[in-house]
Image 1 (cartoon, rainbow, N blue to C red):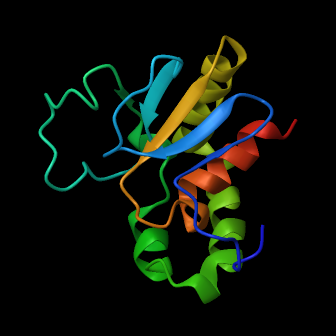
Image 2 (image 1 turned 90 degrees about the horizontal axis):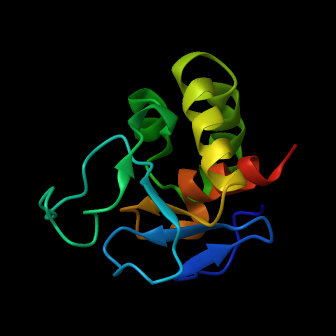
Image 3 (image 1 turned 180 degrees about the horizontal axis):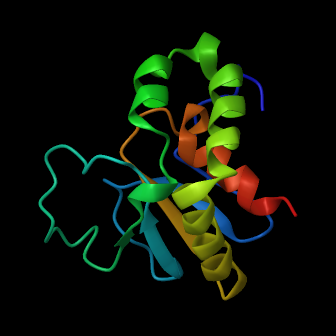
Length: 133
């Protein structure tokens, strides 16, 4: 995915995994909804109806070090995506990724993130990884 990807409200792949902002309301056909950010979204109570049915999977998020290094700098997205994929290949992230693959295999999956730039987010990289086999 290039760093020049146009902005989009949501992204969806043929394999049934969608990425959406956590601040958007749930849709009837969502299926499993999983917050994939390491930090809880700003300004959102844990009882908020937009996340009431969502699982929070922190272990699949990029490390704090990687997240801070990236800083949502569009020019670093390619390197960020590569480093994030490497993080997903071992330990707790690998187990969390296996869990998300299981959810995706049983129906629609919505990955939720608080980022403003969904196409340049870890959630979009994660969506791509889930579509690979």
